[in-house]
Image (spheres, rainbow over the protein chains, first blue to last red):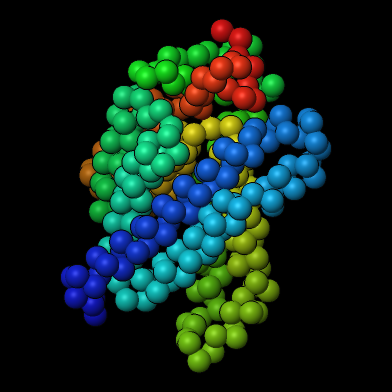
Length: 129
Length: 161
């Protein structure tokens, strides 16, 4: 099926998932600190919004993690089948993001959101198989 | 504050509150995230296939990839996705945006079925229904967590309950 062993395959997927999730969480934290774009634009104009984003350290961390995850995906795709990488990384990233939203971003993940999350997660797995 | 008069507040379990505020512009932003990422990937893949196989020894071919019209279109769409993603995260929680954006998978499967005539198995139809239900359920709910502070509900939000 692929040229890597089971452990190496999963290790690669976990690296990909960790980078993906770190990118999403850093970006989300950056935007929470910047605040609502619409409100900011009214106060400081469109360049005020751009400046607020570009002076936010978490934004760069998010960008770096996203860039690294892009290259990790390319590397993974050259070694592992697409039909294995994409469903595995999409569903695991989703799960890790949901946990990160609760414990790292301190979002209130209501029962409604958990239920939606489980439905969507199950849907991703079924859709990608 | 841009939140509309129709906003609602939902009380969470431990002092958290959720702000519920979806305007037309915000639905458009969510749609741009979905369309930008789905079509961006499609055109990027299409362009890269046109360019043929890449190898490590010819890495400099990558520098010319953006001159391929499909790759260029893919990059523009992915930039559109990224800007909409940033804008959406500026007013909504990650745990709200995430399920909403998975609707792109549903779109891809439906397009493959109705435009390209691909077979969609029963398992995939069940997957489509589950994602649609999950997305509908979450987007109908509140979008932002607001933590109460001594000055009010949140430092930069005026909430009229």
